[in-house]
Image: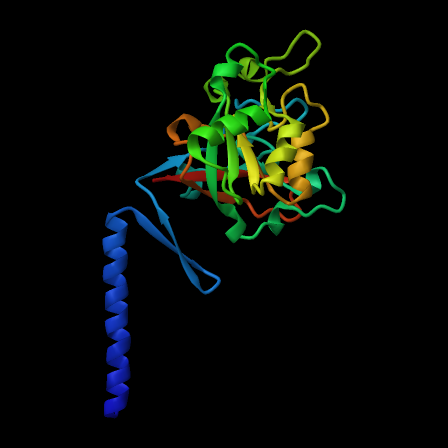
Length: 272
């Protein structure tokens, strides 16, 4: 090997050592590096919060949806390893909806790019409204009040609506809050406010109830508006009380189901 080869090899090793030192140092400060599209972006965080519920057969299920089933396939005592088969609806547990759930020509959950699933999030807390009105829907005035306190909503954000419904998850009857005729009563986004938010350039919406549309909105107006733009719709979130009003980054892990109308998801919140 000639001297120039040794020189090049030495530079490569030095660069790798410097990069390794930088990553170690920044990880200690709670900084994760994300590289894409030939540019470096940074997620700064102090805590990581799991926003997804545990999946088990007793979770609240939308009326008519298939149950969650776990079936043993192999046992340690017999086969020497443990394995189960499971089945679940695409819109069960904490999940994300896809455009084809409402639009014949819409794309499936597998069409969302990895980059689109790493997004900033803001949280609007309406618990003071939902404690007295289970059918409450987010208003434009609520959004403007949030902006008055925290600044204008940044384009590209996912708007998370904290209704307090996550505390009812263990009781399916309370979670759906159905009346004698079977109608559900839980809060959500209003169609008009969703239109306003989309005009502001949001990337999507999320909520701690079973639907971004209120239980009384049988037209699914928010779902349809957001999914018409291939936006993000997250439902059955939890631990929204652990998030600040702004500054959080979401990392959404989907099951890349072929032509899926949605998918159970693991949603991680990186909190600064």
